[in-house]
Image 1: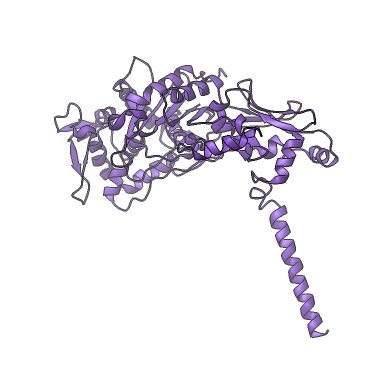
Image 2: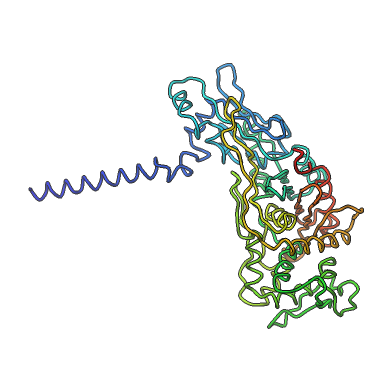
Length: 480
């Protein structure tokens, strides 16, 4: 064969092979999320206008639906508490694409995931219907969580969860926004500019995406690691006002630079240290637990792990632990430790569920246009973080902590508060995690920057009233 012809044939084959590989890569599913499911994909936007997009429902209420105009062009509408639910729902806009569950379940809601007939209908111009999704969220619990944040002018998040299954009952985030304003062409540009210029980032799901230092709620994990290392509620630890970090000259102090309650600067039990959140006691215990022990327990409780909710979720982190000084600082939820409100709710739920961590989920089932069940979420066990006996001990410690928390009114909740520093001359983030064993409900609350109460703000003062209110309105397990 002529050499030039042979070289030309080889080059042509290479080009054909490259084209096939590229086509397979893009069309074969490897790049589907990046291209076909991209929120700004023009074809997806066109399909959304031509499709009776499935509903999003919760507790028998329609949260999102598509309605046609006189020309048969569909638009999205959010009829029920849109601002309360927007951090979860997101939006489906002909101008700005999709976000939240509208994006994560876009192929389901558009009917792409199940329907050859829908694809044929789209190609022939016939009526096209998407599937609907039912959420685990309880509208009353969601409304309470959102309003407790919003009505007080707080920036923060609340997550309520069913410990035994992982079903989320509330996921509220402030500041928020009205998705109707973004999907309405007449208001879309102004609304888009407003939410994107808001320093509070209302488009961010603060409950699942914002990673913040947890402060003393992390002592639940440190205590679990201590129990695993042989400590008991009666173990004696320092109650001194300050302690020197291992192998340093740096002093770490208790809140307010005070000795642990009742210690006189001497020894206190782990139970007392947990109830009064004495930093110095946990620093001392962390040196016995060690770096590996703390990291292993944080991992068991889900720190550093994100979840597939159909929504963006952040993983949080324990941070680097190069030495015992870093481990000591991290043992009280400071230094580089971060968690989301979702992860904090998972942490509390794991204790409530006899130490068994469940996968959280927000979509209960997918329904076809004739209300036939396409799929249903089954509770999924992740790991046995601690033994049932250790979980029982942690529960008793959390009962004692609740009795010592401001606003305690004789309730039967198990809880832990947290006050997390995150910069000089900046009010702390304040936390409250709790569960009600009788109702099978756990809650996590974070209010950013002290909620307007300044540098003296505490989780008991600011966040616990929200958490208690949510626990009281949430439905008991089995009553949804």
